[in-house]
Amino acid sequence: MVRASDLKAGMILSLEKNLCRIFHVEYHMGGGKMGGLVHVKLKDLRSGLFVERKFKPEERVQVADLDRKVMEYLYKDADGYYMMDPESYDQIRLDKHHLEAFDPFLQPNMKLTVEFLGEDPIHVVFPEWVELEVTSTPPSLGSLQDEVTKAATLSNGLQIQVPQFIKAGDLLKVNVATKKYMERLKK
Image 1: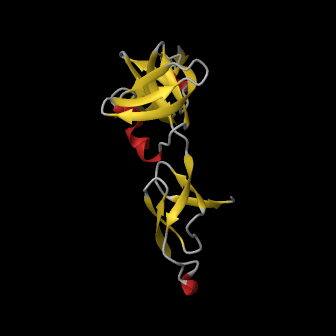
Image 2: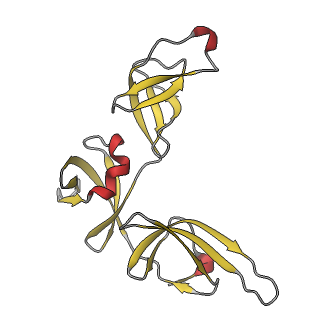
Image 3: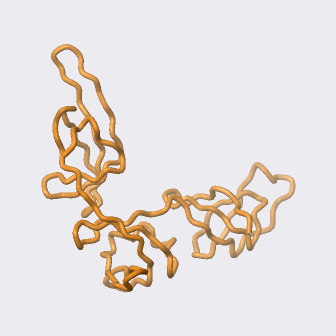
């Protein structure tokens, strides 16, 4: 149990038998007889829905104690996604909602952190960015080098907009959340 005034983004709370990850915390100071409030934006880990809650700063909330394990992605089928513990070789199946948002970026043998509550997988922690190779892109327009972007197809089939200087074979850093080009990496 922690005080609501001590909540931080990233924490997992146990609220009304639901597990919720904190995405944003905002503190509002009260004035006069009006006490302060802690506004929290949460994501329910089972349903994926966002909710907002208000707590009094002195109110106590239950923080979930999760175990984290780095696991290796194997494959997916109609039932879900399969991961393996690289130390014990134990395999688990994750429901589709755990990895659907990250699906375009999944590659065999990719390592991802899985959070467990007891034996149950609750959440998969995605990296902020991935490295992908450009498989095809049109030649650059020399006169518009810095001002115009062009389409590029990446090794996972994703099409994104990239600067004119990018060419086939380049390794790019791509933001997972926005699916946008971040920078060209050295090979």
